[in-house]
Length: 190
Image (cartoon, rainbow, N blue to C red):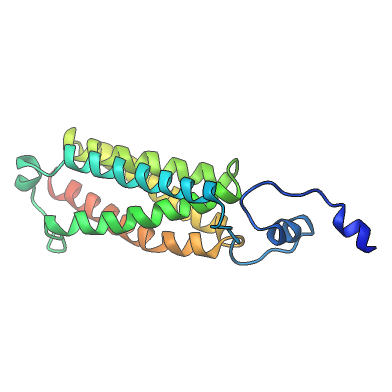
């Protein structure tokens, strides 16, 4: 290939480093996207993801806070105190938002982005189903596919973006625990 041919390749106008796009075109991949955070648009999208995920989660959390119904449930011995949930979810929502942002910047119309969006919707409807509707069965029906979508996201992005996959590992662990907790509450209270 001549020096002239090298300069004639089309320029990528997205937010992912050109070298990354070259490796994708040639079939060479790496363990993480090279996202150019010097692009103002990239940082704007990061802010959008952080605000949307944390803001929506906080709004839902404050509107569906555990009340008398939850306090009256028989709980397993491993049930954490209520104060644990807020800080844990804040940290997880930051990590979820960053993983979603990275996926959106690199591949907005991808299976990974669909999995991210799907698990996010399920995440946001679980609290209203559990705390507002006071329906342990409905919450269980929601949390199982949510966990499946989280695990599928990790598997899907692992070859291309280990950062996003690793950001989802604590989330998968917490939702696995929440699934066991939800099932325990269901068994103890039916």
